[in-house]
Length: 446
Image (cartoon, rainbow, N blue to C red; front, side, top):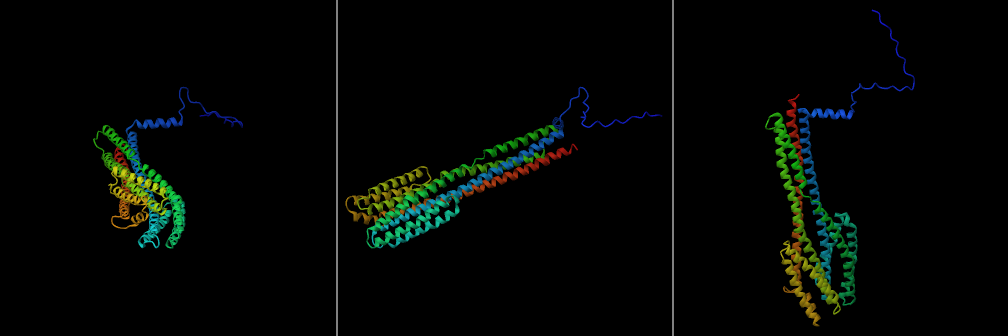
C-alpha cells in the first residue's frame, strides 16, 4: 500500500499570533469559577454532599458556641477581677485620707489641752501618720496610674508632720505661735493633700464603674446556645427523614451536651453578672458611704478644735463643721434608706453632734474654759467618747463591707471563669460527637 507523503508545515513567522480554535457553534464556554459552583451544586444534590454540609454546620455551630462561651466567661472574669482590684485601691486611698484627717483631728484636739499633750493622743497621732505613710507607699506600687499623685502626697506628708512638730514644741512652751504652725499644717493638708487624694479617688471610682460596666450579661451566650441547638436538631430531623433512622447517637449526644452545659454556663454567667450588680449597689456602696462619712466627721472634729483655738474668731470653722456633719449624716441616712447600712453609725454620729452643740453653747455663752474642758474630756459620757463610738462603728462598716466586696467579686470571677471553660469544653466535645455521628453515615456511601 502506497502512502502519500505529507509536507510538514513550516513554523509561523516571528510575531505571528496564534488563535485558539473556537468552540463549536452553540456550545458556551464555561468560566472556571462557574464550573466549581456547578460541581458544588451537583454534589449537594446527592446525599453524601448534603451529609457533609450538615456535618460542617454542626461542627462549626458547636465550636462557635464553645469559643463564644469561653470569650464571654474570660471577659466577665477579667472585668470582675479588675473591679475587685480597683475597688480595693479606691478603699485603700480612702483609708489613707481618713487616717490623715483623723491624725489632724487628734493633733488639733491635743493642742487644746496645752503644755504636754496626753500620751495616748500622741500615740494615736503617730499610729495614724505611720499608717498613712505605709499605705501611700503600698498603693503607689500597686497602681501605676495613681503613683505620681500619691508620691506627691507622701512628700507633702513630710512637710505636714514637720509643721505639727513645730506647733507642738511651741505649744509646750506656751508660745502663741504654735497655733500658727498648726494652722499652716492643717492648710497644707486641706488645700493640697486632701484634694490630691480626692482626685485619685475620683479616678479610681471611674475605673471601678468601667469595670462593673464590663461585666456583661449572658444573652449572647444564650443566643449562641440556641443557634447551636437549632442546627443540631434540624440536622437530626433531616438525617432521620433521609436515612429512615430515628436517632443518630453522635448528633443526639452533642445536642444533650450543648443543652445541659449551655444552660449551666448561661446560668453561671448570669449569676456572676447579677452578683456584680448586687455588690455594686450593696457592700461597695456601703463601703463608700461609711468611708466618706468617716472622713467628713474627722474633718468636722478638727474644725471643732480650731473653733475653740481661735477663741471667738472661729465662726468660719464652725460653719465648716456644720457643712461636714450634715454631708456625713446625709450619706449615712441614704445608705440606711437603701438598706446597705443598718443606721447605727448614723445614730452614733447624731449623738456626737448633740455633744458638740453643748460645747458650742458653753463657748458662745462666754465660758471658753468650760467648753474646752468639755471638748477635751474623756469621760464615758463625753463628746470624745461619743466620737470614738461613731469612729468604731464607721470603721467596722468599712472593714466589713470592703471584705464582702472583695469576697463576692472574687467568687463571681471564679464562677465566670468556670463557666467559660465549661462552655469551651462542651463546644469541642459536641463538635467531636457530631463529627463521629455524621461520619458513620458517610461511611455507608463509600
